[in-house]
Length: 393
Image (cartoon, rainbow, N blue to C red):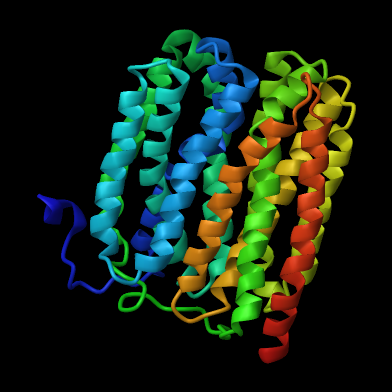
């Protein structure tokens, strides 16, 4: 039965092959499917399940902790297990978590089931991102991955208000379970491991452990900041005087700006060579600017501009960060560590944000995200410069 899904384990799969890249991108969408529309999901928990803003934040954090702990565990075992087998089991686990979530509105039980779904999702995210990191042009391919994730996100934000009013939160959760199961059709096209069936990009340089640690730390710090802001982005807008529809419209539009950001990274990847400092710096500066605009938001126009800049900057920066890690070793292992850092950051972010909210005042959330983005820039500079010095071509 398992072989019918995973295919022939002895067949060599080249990560650059078109069907393999399509499979990795599809599973890369399914894995973070709820996180991508998390502002709308959190709003749904508040409005339709009656959770408080803090409870919804902790639920979102619980799912991210499931993802994060799984990606962390994979840093120890990714090179010892068959990727296709574990992906199959993970898909079934994520689907089970989503289907079972429809049975309860108890906050603790619901959060536990979201963590269970997160465990399955974490495997999909880690191994598909690692597979793309092993392609010959990770900057471009990560850009395309993020671009398609955001296309899904735009559709999600557009349809979620309608979905809530027609099928409710129960129907939405059931949809996510079915989306998980659809990923089974693509498992056979992914590499079975990082050692035997994939290639690495030509400018790979093995960095000393200190620089690798800084690079992985950057992923953690950057995505703590991302998670801090992202989970409350809908509520930041509604608290600033915008209607729910205006906030939803702003988030939908921001997804297209996010697609543009990811497309930008894909298009300029071949031109920047091994110099990524400028592109990463511009992206982080854009994130900081967007958060400055969110202070004291009054009305839908400023909110829409802020979230569009936020999404563009984040999704331009993310592929460059991932591709930088992919160029720091020859097996893709550091991408596994980086994705673990990313997911840990996204898990910490919503709970950390929930802890600093003061009576529906989200300014502390914005300050926290701003500071973390700046710190992330200064931690990524040393490894990128070291890579450039060791590979000047």
